[in-house]
Image (cartoon, rainbow, N blue to C red; front, side, top):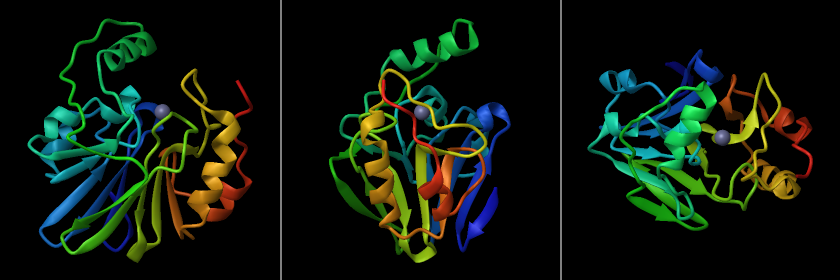
Length: 202
Ligand SMILES: [Zn+2]
Protein backbone atom coordinates (compact mmCIF):
# COMPACT_ATOMS: atom_id res chain seq x y z
CA UNK A 1 0.00 0.00 0.00
CA UNK A 2 1.37 3.39 -1.03
CA UNK A 3 -0.17 6.48 0.60
CA UNK A 4 -0.78 9.05 -2.17
CA UNK A 5 -2.77 11.51 -0.04
CA UNK A 6 -3.84 11.63 3.60
CA UNK A 7 -5.62 8.32 4.18
CA UNK A 8 -5.77 7.49 0.47
CA UNK A 9 -3.74 4.51 -0.69
CA UNK A 10 -3.01 2.61 -3.86
CA UNK A 11 -1.96 -0.99 -4.04
CA UNK A 12 0.00 -1.96 -7.13
CA UNK A 13 0.11 -5.53 -8.39
CA UNK A 14 2.64 -7.08 -10.72
CA UNK A 15 -0.17 -9.21 -12.15
CA UNK A 16 -1.57 -7.21 -15.10
CA UNK A 17 0.01 -4.07 -13.59
CA UNK A 18 -3.29 -3.75 -11.70
CA UNK A 19 -3.91 -0.83 -9.34
CA UNK A 20 -6.43 -0.92 -6.48
CA UNK A 21 -7.46 1.95 -4.22
CA UNK A 22 -8.13 2.20 -0.50
CA UNK A 23 -9.74 5.15 1.28
CA UNK A 24 -9.62 5.35 5.07
CA UNK A 25 -11.89 7.40 7.32
CA UNK A 26 -12.23 7.18 11.08
CA UNK A 27 -13.10 3.53 11.87
CA UNK A 28 -14.23 2.91 8.31
CA UNK A 29 -12.70 2.25 4.92
CA UNK A 30 -13.56 1.69 1.29
CA UNK A 31 -11.76 -0.43 -1.30
CA UNK A 32 -11.76 0.51 -4.98
CA UNK A 33 -11.96 -2.78 -6.91
CA UNK A 34 -11.36 -6.14 -5.26
CA UNK A 35 -8.78 -7.27 -7.80
CA UNK A 36 -7.38 -10.76 -8.24
CA UNK A 37 -5.64 -11.40 -4.94
CA UNK A 38 -7.78 -12.68 -2.02
CA UNK A 39 -4.71 -12.36 0.26
CA UNK A 40 -5.33 -8.61 0.46
CA UNK A 41 -8.31 -9.41 2.71
CA UNK A 42 -5.84 -10.37 5.44
CA UNK A 43 -4.54 -6.78 5.40
CA UNK A 44 -7.66 -4.65 4.97
CA UNK A 45 -11.27 -5.05 6.11
CA UNK A 46 -13.25 -2.46 4.15
CA UNK A 47 -16.94 -1.99 4.94
CA UNK A 48 -17.50 -1.20 1.27
CA UNK A 49 -16.00 -2.20 -2.06
CA UNK A 50 -16.68 -0.12 -5.16
CA UNK A 51 -16.37 -2.00 -8.44
CA UNK A 52 -15.26 0.35 -11.21
CA UNK A 53 -16.55 -2.13 -13.82
CA UNK A 54 -17.18 -5.85 -14.28
CA UNK A 55 -13.93 -7.00 -15.92
CA UNK A 56 -12.52 -10.06 -14.18
CA UNK A 57 -9.32 -8.46 -12.94
CA UNK A 58 -11.34 -5.84 -11.01
CA UNK A 59 -13.98 -8.06 -9.37
CA UNK A 60 -12.69 -11.60 -8.85
CA UNK A 61 -11.48 -11.35 -5.22
CA UNK A 62 -14.64 -9.69 -3.83
CA UNK A 63 -15.77 -12.78 -1.90
CA UNK A 64 -12.64 -12.69 0.26
CA UNK A 65 -13.73 -9.35 1.78
CA UNK A 66 -17.26 -10.35 2.80
CA UNK A 67 -19.18 -9.27 4.73
CA UNK A 68 -19.14 -5.82 3.17
CA UNK A 69 -21.28 -3.69 0.88
CA UNK A 70 -20.49 -4.04 -2.82
CA UNK A 71 -21.22 -0.89 -4.81
CA UNK A 72 -21.39 -0.59 -8.58
CA UNK A 73 -23.27 1.12 -11.37
CA UNK A 74 -26.75 -0.30 -11.95
CA UNK A 75 -25.66 -1.80 -15.29
CA UNK A 76 -22.72 -3.67 -13.76
CA UNK A 77 -23.52 -7.36 -14.24
CA UNK A 78 -21.30 -9.83 -12.41
CA UNK A 79 -22.12 -13.30 -13.72
CA UNK A 80 -20.38 -16.39 -15.13
CA UNK A 81 -19.08 -14.35 -18.06
CA UNK A 82 -16.50 -12.98 -15.61
CA UNK A 83 -15.14 -16.51 -15.07
CA UNK A 84 -15.23 -17.24 -18.80
CA UNK A 85 -13.27 -14.06 -19.47
CA UNK A 86 -10.69 -15.02 -16.82
CA UNK A 87 -10.37 -18.55 -18.26
CA UNK A 88 -9.93 -17.18 -21.77
CA UNK A 89 -7.31 -14.65 -20.74
CA UNK A 90 -5.09 -17.21 -19.03
CA UNK A 91 -6.07 -20.06 -21.35
CA UNK A 92 -6.97 -22.34 -18.43
CA UNK A 93 -10.24 -23.37 -16.81
CA UNK A 94 -11.25 -21.31 -13.81
CA UNK A 95 -13.90 -21.46 -11.11
CA UNK A 96 -14.48 -18.97 -8.34
CA UNK A 97 -17.11 -17.39 -6.14
CA UNK A 98 -18.69 -14.38 -7.76
CA UNK A 99 -20.33 -11.62 -5.72
CA UNK A 100 -23.02 -9.47 -7.29
CA UNK A 101 -23.27 -5.81 -6.29
CA UNK A 102 -25.44 -5.19 -3.24
CA UNK A 103 -25.80 -1.44 -3.81
CA UNK A 104 -26.12 0.33 -7.16
CA UNK A 105 -26.63 3.84 -8.50
CA UNK A 106 -27.32 5.48 -11.86
CA UNK A 107 -25.58 8.88 -12.10
CA UNK A 108 -23.93 9.66 -8.80
CA UNK A 109 -24.09 8.92 -5.12
CA UNK A 110 -22.26 10.27 -2.08
CA UNK A 111 -20.94 7.89 0.57
CA UNK A 112 -19.77 8.66 4.09
CA UNK A 113 -16.59 6.73 4.85
CA UNK A 114 -15.99 7.34 8.54
CA UNK A 115 -16.80 11.05 8.26
CA UNK A 116 -15.11 11.37 4.92
CA UNK A 117 -17.01 12.19 1.74
CA UNK A 118 -16.54 9.88 -1.24
CA UNK A 119 -18.54 10.50 -4.44
CA UNK A 120 -19.26 7.84 -7.04
CA UNK A 121 -19.99 9.08 -10.56
CA UNK A 122 -21.01 7.50 -13.83
CA UNK A 123 -20.28 9.85 -16.72
CA UNK A 124 -21.65 7.66 -19.51
CA UNK A 125 -20.31 4.67 -21.45
CA UNK A 126 -16.64 4.49 -22.45
CA UNK A 127 -14.42 1.55 -21.35
CA UNK A 128 -17.68 -0.29 -20.49
CA UNK A 129 -21.36 0.70 -20.28
CA UNK A 130 -21.06 1.16 -16.53
CA UNK A 131 -17.70 2.75 -15.61
CA UNK A 132 -17.57 4.19 -12.09
CA UNK A 133 -15.32 7.10 -11.16
CA UNK A 134 -14.52 7.37 -7.43
CA UNK A 135 -13.78 10.89 -6.18
CA UNK A 136 -12.29 11.75 -2.79
CA UNK A 137 -12.78 15.54 -2.79
CA UNK A 138 -10.82 16.37 0.39
CA UNK A 139 -7.75 14.65 -1.10
CA UNK A 140 -8.16 15.72 -4.73
CA UNK A 141 -7.93 12.08 -5.77
CA UNK A 142 -9.96 10.41 -8.50
CA UNK A 143 -9.93 6.65 -9.12
CA UNK A 144 -10.64 6.25 -12.82
CA UNK A 145 -10.80 2.49 -13.30
CA UNK A 146 -9.81 1.53 -16.83
CA UNK A 147 -10.89 4.86 -18.30
CA UNK A 148 -7.22 5.68 -17.73
CA UNK A 149 -4.19 3.43 -18.05
CA UNK A 150 -0.57 4.33 -17.41
CA UNK A 151 2.23 2.34 -19.03
CA UNK A 152 -0.03 0.91 -21.72
CA UNK A 153 -2.72 2.31 -24.01
CA UNK A 154 -6.30 2.41 -22.71
CA UNK A 155 -8.12 -0.72 -23.83
CA UNK A 156 -11.37 -0.87 -25.75
CA UNK A 157 -12.98 -4.30 -26.02
CA UNK A 158 -16.27 -5.21 -27.65
CA UNK A 159 -18.13 -3.73 -24.65
CA UNK A 160 -16.51 -0.29 -25.04
CA UNK A 161 -17.88 2.95 -26.48
CA UNK A 162 -14.76 4.71 -27.80
CA UNK A 163 -16.75 7.56 -29.37
CA UNK A 164 -17.81 8.78 -25.91
CA UNK A 165 -14.44 8.25 -24.17
CA UNK A 166 -13.06 11.77 -24.53
CA UNK A 167 -16.35 13.26 -23.30
CA UNK A 168 -16.22 11.04 -20.20
CA UNK A 169 -12.62 12.09 -19.51
CA UNK A 170 -13.61 15.75 -19.88
CA UNK A 171 -16.27 15.26 -17.20
CA UNK A 172 -13.73 13.48 -14.99
CA UNK A 173 -11.35 16.42 -15.39
CA UNK A 174 -14.10 18.80 -14.26
CA UNK A 175 -13.60 17.23 -10.81
CA UNK A 176 -10.25 19.06 -10.91
CA UNK A 177 -8.20 16.12 -9.60
CA UNK A 178 -4.70 16.53 -8.21
CA UNK A 179 -4.06 12.79 -8.67
CA UNK A 180 -5.81 10.36 -11.00
CA UNK A 181 -5.38 6.68 -10.21
CA UNK A 182 -5.65 4.43 -13.26
CA UNK A 183 -6.96 0.87 -13.25
CA UNK A 184 -3.55 -0.29 -14.43
CA UNK A 185 -0.26 1.54 -13.90
CA UNK A 186 0.99 4.33 -11.66
CA UNK A 187 -1.01 7.37 -10.51
CA UNK A 188 -0.96 10.29 -12.95
CA UNK A 189 -1.98 13.95 -13.00
CA UNK A 190 -4.75 15.80 -14.82
CA UNK A 191 -2.42 16.77 -17.64
CA UNK A 192 -1.74 13.09 -18.40
CA UNK A 193 -5.49 12.49 -18.70
CA UNK A 194 -5.97 15.56 -20.89
CA UNK A 195 -3.18 14.45 -23.22
CA UNK A 196 -3.73 10.69 -23.28
CA UNK A 197 -4.83 8.99 -26.47
CA UNK A 198 -8.29 7.47 -26.26
CA UNK A 199 -9.04 4.28 -28.18
CA UNK A 200 -10.31 4.85 -31.70
CA UNK A 201 -13.81 3.79 -32.73
CA UNK A 202 -14.89 0.17 -33.03
ZN1 LIG B 1 -11.36 -3.22 -17.82
